[in-house]
Amino acid sequence: MSAQTSAESPAQSSNGWLKSYYYLRFAVSAAWVLAAFTVAKTVSPLAAVMLVAYPLWDALANYVDAQRSGGLGRNRSQLLNFVVSIVTAMAVAIALGHGMNAVLAVYGVWAVVSGAFQLLTAVRRWKTNGAQWAMILSGAQSALAGLFFVKMAGGAEAIGIANVAPYAAFGAFYFLVSAVWLSVSDVLRKSPQAVR
Image (tube, rainbow, N blue to C red; front, side, top):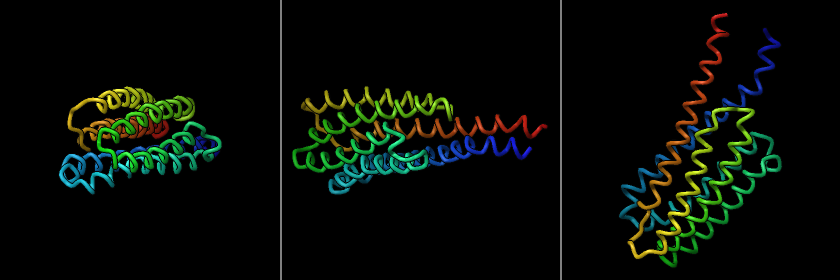
């Protein structure tokens, strides 16, 4: 019994962290979206801070997650995502001085690149953690959304933080789906053991 428990503990610990991580990322993204559609929509200084903070939060989240999985050196896709997100935050801060079209273009490029790295991270984790299909979909959709952002940035349409919010909302949705899927999978895995 104890041998079985110790054999399962690394995977359970990993899944336990991922569940908490995904729920946290959902909560932060959902709060960001709510603020983007309400207060920040009419308060430009707050919108500017939020637009810089979003990629910074992504960088921090990738860093912390990688540290729980052996460090950035062993998780190259997250290392690259971390670096790209830091660079993006700086680029957004500069682009704010040139207008929201420039900001949206930066977000578009970031969404394409970070989406690809997120997809790679999910594929790598599939063997050890499972339930990564939602993260793979999220990464692919992020890349597609990025291409749409770049195209929109070149148009004449008035752009604001509300144009970025749906991208964050889809991200929040996929994090929630992944967290719930892992939670349900854990319950189903433990059920036969409980019967025994």
